[in-house]
Image 1 (cartoon, rainbow, N blue to C red):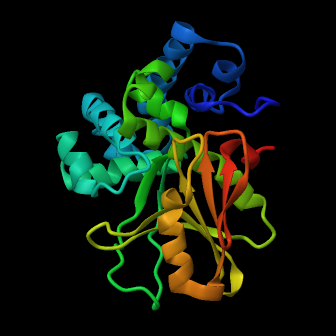
Image 2 (image 1 turned 180 degrees about the vertical axis):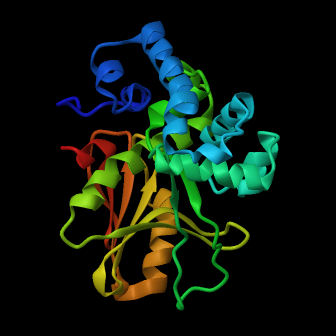
Length: 261
C-alpha cells in the first residue's frame, strides 16, 4: 500500500490492482487486464473442478461465466439472488450450486443481515461481495477510467475494496467481531457494514466516494446511534479525502487509508 494518502483515482487504482502480488506489483494497463482475464478463465474452468464433485460436473462454462459477471456487477449490493441468476439466464438450482463452488474457492462471500429486537422491519437477505475488487473489474473488463465514469459502479468497487481490507482485520481481532449489513424494508435506512462485537456492541461503517463528507452524509450512522444508544460504540464514514475529523457524537470521518495506516 502507498505511504501517502491516495485521492479518489488512487483508491480506484488500488482497487483494480487487487491483492494478487503479480498484477498489483508488476503489471499495469493492458498487461494487468490480460492477467486477470487469464486468471478468471482458469478460475472458472480448472480451479472450480478441484472443488466440484465429479458426479456433478455438468457445468456450462458460458453460463458460469455469465453468472460470475452478474455477481460481480452486484458486488456490494443488495440485489436478490434471483436478479443475479435471471441476468445470467440460469436456474435457481444452478445458481445455488455455482455460488457454493465460488464460495469454496474464496472468491465470493455473503455478509449476513444484522438482526435486532430493537429495530423492526429489517431486510433479512445477505449482501454479496467478490472478495477482491480487482476480480470485479476483471470480470467486467474495466480499468480505473471505466470505474470512475460510472457512479453506481464506483460505489460498489470502493465498498468491495473496503470490505476486502476489513476481512483480515476482523480475522486478527482479539474480540472476534462478525460482519453484517443493515437495511430496513423500503430502503429508508441502510448501513453498509456493521462489525458486531461482544456484549451486543457494534461499530457501524459507511463508505463514500467523497473527499470531504459532511454530517448529512453520516445521517444513517446518526440514525443507528440514536436507535441503539450505548450499544453503538462508534460510526466510521470511510472516504477518499486526506483528513480524519468528527462528524457528530461517536461518529468520525476517516480516509480509507487508515485501514492500513
